[in-house]
Image (cartoon, rainbow, N blue to C red; front, side):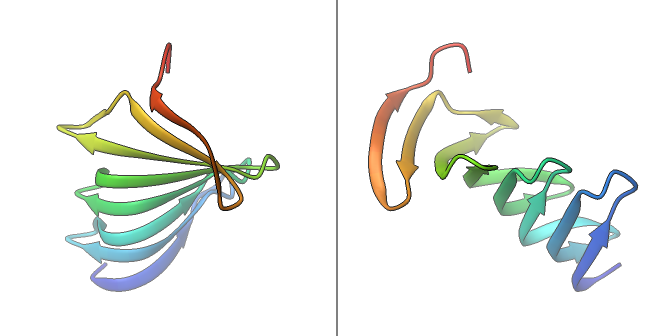
Amino acid sequence: MEGIGNITWDDNSTYQGGFADNMLNGTGTYIDSQGNKLEGTWVNNTVSGHLCITVSNTGIRLEREVVNNELSKYVKAYRGTTLVYEGEMVNG
């Protein structure tokens, strides 16, 4: 698959965004089967760089960085547009 598209897996999780070489590549949004949303840039099926995670049914949005396939410990947490936490994640 190449270009912009949509895919739905057997567990009803979805991805909408860029594809290259039959992998998730480019800007896209993945929504898991429980409604949690990951928005970011994908490189060969892996998120890279800035990542926004919206936790289903909570109104909480987390912003983190992904470097060398690892989530940074630094996080910003928002409820709606209000910043509610900024700092290092502990056990997460």
